[in-house]
Image (cartoon, rainbow, N blue to C red):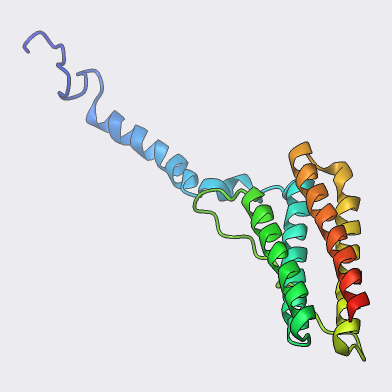
Amino acid sequence: MADGSASPGSVPAPGLSRRAMLTASAAALPLLVSACKGVQALGTPPPPPAAVRALEAAISAEAAMIARYALALKQLTAGAYTAAHAVQAEHVAHLAQLRSRLVEPAGARPPVHPPPPSPSPAAGVTGPHAVLGELEMAEQAASDGLIGELGGLPPSLAQLFASIAASEATHAEYLRAERRVR
C-alpha cells in the first residue's frame, strides 16, 4: 500500500519508530514483572467468615465423635455394640452433610485442620453400661454445642445444625435406654 496506510496485520504506523516501541516495552517491563506476583501482591487473604469457622468446627467435632465411637465399639459386646454402631453410622451421615456444605474453590489447597483429638476412655470406664454412659454424655454435649452456635449462622446452616443437634439429643436418649437394658 503506497499511500502510507497500514493494512490489518502489517507493520506499525510509520509515525511509531522502532526506538519508540523498544522504549515503551522497556517502560512496561517493571509492570509486567510486578504483576507476576499475582494474588500475593494483594496481601494475605482475610480470615474465613464466622459461619465457615463454625462449619469447620462442626466437621471436626463429628470426626472426633466417629473416632470416639470406634474406640467404644472395641469395648462393647453384642447388643450394646449393635446400638452404638447404628449411632456411629448416623454420625458418618452427619459428617457427610456437613462436608457437603463446605465449598472449596477449585484448585484450592484443602484447609489444614489439626486432627481431631484422640478420644480416650475416662479413667475406670469399663463395661457396656459405663461406656454407653460416656457416649450418652458426649452426645448431649455435642447437641448443646451445636445449639449454642445457631444464633450467628445463616438460616440454611442453622437448620442443618439444629437438625444434627436434635439427632444427637435423640442419640443420648437412645443410649440412655440402652444403658437401662445393660
